[in-house]
Image 1 (spheres, one colour):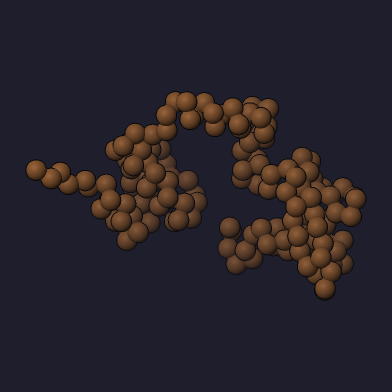
Image 2 (image 1 turned 180 degrees about the vertical axis):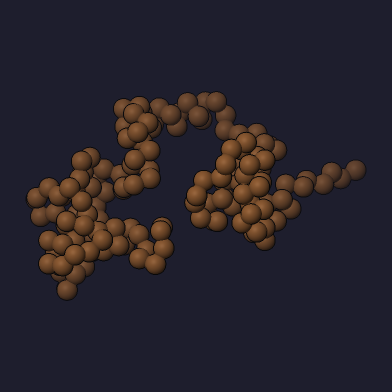
Length: 150
């Protein structure tokens, strides 16, 4: 006797579901309102949750290891972790941008950015120093698409 696993079909169905249907599934599976993220995010998190509920989630030892690694990065401060994940690249990341034939490298610091040995509070101020005009620093360095929010 062969048993049919409905999970692959549910995962495939996410691709053709409407956004309101995805949001309904989110409410059903997470018992909370869906976040205001793009469709691709909703699909991937729903796909993970469907599989997690059907097959089980991460082992407790894996969760502990991930939490320990997170604490090594941010000292256990959830706000630092959330800000880093949501708003900025990880400290030490080098952002490289060519402008008018010159390559510019910016290093991400804990409290800002560094370019040519000088600290800056924002990427926009670095972009302004490089170009002499006002720029959104996230767009200038290719971290944000100027046509969308991501």
